[in-house]
Every structure is written in structure tokens, then in C-alpha cells.
Length: 182
View: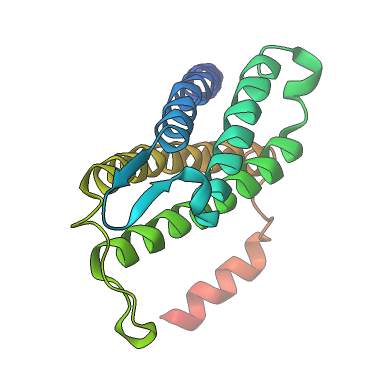
């Protein structure tokens, strides 16, 4: 029983640290995205506002960073910690939103590097190399943030489901099963 108490305390610290770690990552991905722009004398200017998927990622990063801050604070408020189901559901939702925004950035990068021959789009990174390089950095930072939220989702799931006892199996039925397997 003492181990479970220590485990819960350590888990709370890891949970809080991960939530705090996500905040600067979210801010960095937002800043790198919003300030990403490049001029090209042949093709014009490309910037953050030209790409809907990038705008979506910025919104999700802002929401997840704000959520991480609020939940990190609420971890230490006793009445809110007992709301394990809220953390479980909201951590799952944020993790899924992070997956979708990471997919949006991945698609933008794929098209920027490879183009799409079916719709006669050529690749753009040879003309906008700096823009693509920063976008790759955003992808990496966002992927790290997603990994943090996946771990947080597992931690919150553990918190919810560890409150329940395993199902009761009567000894008589259990003995009958053993006899059947012999």
C-alpha cells in the first residue's frame, strides 16, 4: 500500500512536469509558425496566413498550451484533482486534436517537398527552402508535444481506472475453469 501512495505522488509530479514542459513547446511552435515567411522574386511571398493547416495547428497549439497551464495549476488544487474523469476525457481530446494538427503539418510538408502531379502542383521547397526548414522544425516540436500529451493521456487513464477493483471471480468458477483446461 505504501508503494501505491508513493507511486501516486510521483505520478502527480511527472504529470505536472509534463504539463509544464508542453507550454514552452506550444509557444515555440506557435512563434515559429506565425513568424515563418519567405519572399521569392519569381513566385512571391509565402507566409503562415497562406496555409489553413498551419493556422489550424497554431490554434490547437494555443489551446493545448493553455489547457496544459490550467491543468498543471489544477493538479495542486485538491477539489479539482478528484475530477479524474474530467482529466481523462480532456487529455484524450487534446491528444487527438494534436494528432490531427500534426497530420495537417505533415501534409503541408509532404506537398511542399513532393508536390502533387495529379493537380499539377510542383514542389515548393526548392524555391522556399527557409520556410520549409522552419516548418520541419515546427513539425518536430509539435511531435514532441504530441508525445507528451499521449503520455499524459495514459497517466490520466491510469488514474481513472486504478480507482476500480478488478472484477470478482468466484473461486468455484475459477476451479471449474482449471479442471476444464487440464
